[in-house]
Length: 636
Image: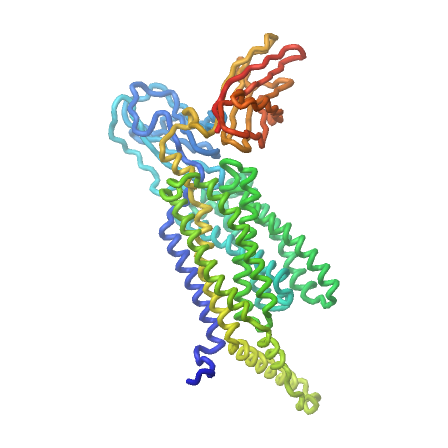
């Protein structure tokens, strides 16, 4: 073979099919491994303590059993069950009592009186604030340990066949979102001519269909996923109604409504927009579609942020918009990458200008991903030990490594892009010119004319493919983009797994076994309790203050006031001030807003530096009865 001879490899028709088959096999392999090894999804909330403790032996029967959690949870009638040695219910079977105080999340159930000695089993199941089901069990003994006949379900919450299908739907939803948003952005920003290309239309529409179907499956399976684990309960109307009353259910319904708006966007993009020929009108329509599509895409991304990890834990008001930006950047990068792959393999018309525009979009997306990813990593991991010693941290390391590989492959793609010219496109357009010598002879025979037109179109398409595949720069770019897409498939799968894995910060705190009711560590949430007496009628009570995260910077502050009878107490006026006397800082005034009876809150309270802060609280119970109390707290 001479140095100038073309490479006689696989046929142009087989290579796109081989690429598609390779990607499909890779997707199946990755998700198969993930589903086989992941097990039931862990959750953000974790059991941090109990009374009696796991394995404890108490002399007398307790009146109640309490469980403490690291984050807010949702409970039902049978969320906490206490079983005696014979397997019978030892609790009163009432709904668990909410015993939470400040940042401490605690629930309890009352026990029957006169319980005999022996070993008792506590089985619990709840839903974490970030939408994932959690469950567990432990034992304690009265008097002395004994044998038990308790048979607990071997399947954890969120596991079994329902859990597998729900996880598949979760993965598919992320994939559909990436194709829908990234594909639409690619057409509007990088390659407007793609609006008339059938392969691009199919890519975006399939992304919409995948996301819609996955959302419907998740909505129907939400009740059995968090409860019985039986597929039949997917059609339980009472269970579906209870799902709609929860934060995850509301998020899924909101997503479906936004997908209706997305369907209208797609119809305009590949209908009116694709047919528009006047450049000025098309430019105006591009701006309108970009604004409308951006709003819809942001809304869809927010349905994840409002119901998963970002919605709970520290700095949730910052984490949710950051999570939305992260999701949009992922979609723009990976969805645009999939669109570029389809355009290079299935359409002959994409030119170098479109590829270079996508290169700019991809670079901007990577910058956003880096900034938002660093913040999310700090928030969810919090320490080096959690990064290397927890499953969440290890997945995060794997994700960073995959991004590094993806960027390395993208560097090669940029080199091919720099060499790419539009000569092949010009040659392809020339290939469309066909002799019309037979047109007059067949004009009287419409059937013959249609047959010749089909033959001409097939011949032109074959010539276009041959010319396109003969371009070495375009061929090199296709191979490097295919490699990017392969790594992106794995990256998307790992990212999806992170959303259903217990964050490293929470896992490490739970593993430490620190009871939620214990005093906060330095630099952690601050909880204060201060009695007061204004001297007037009904002037006695207690002020409880919760400052979270209790570090320098922005903090959330909550204040509860209880009357002398222990019930929530409203007062006409409540003011706070913070003073760091050692540095002559303050007083810094804080005026909280009333949220409910006896409950006030202030967000974004700034603590400029760490130290022993004096917190002054002014309580007014009448027009003339007022008192100011103070207490010191170490913050930061």
